[in-house]
Length: 89
Image 1 (cartoon, rainbow, N blue to C red):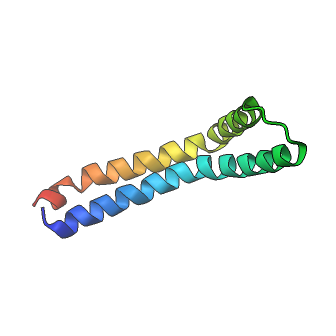
Image 2 (cartoon, rainbow, N blue to C red; image 1 turned 90 degrees about the horizontal axis):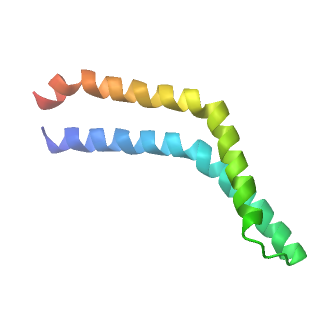
């Protein structure tokens, strides 16, 4: 294995990680920002006020995007397994 191959495999793995986590992190970030603005405006400092909506949003995103995320991961993994002879040799 050359350093270029290791770099390419690592780069692909990082891109898949970003693609798999972005659908979960971005809506959670947006909900957290909206709730933080609401808390700042009303001066309500309740920790469960941010936790419960984020949990609900993450659950909904997983229900909607979960199959596509799983398929993306499986496609990457199968491609990686198929490329093992090329990567080693």
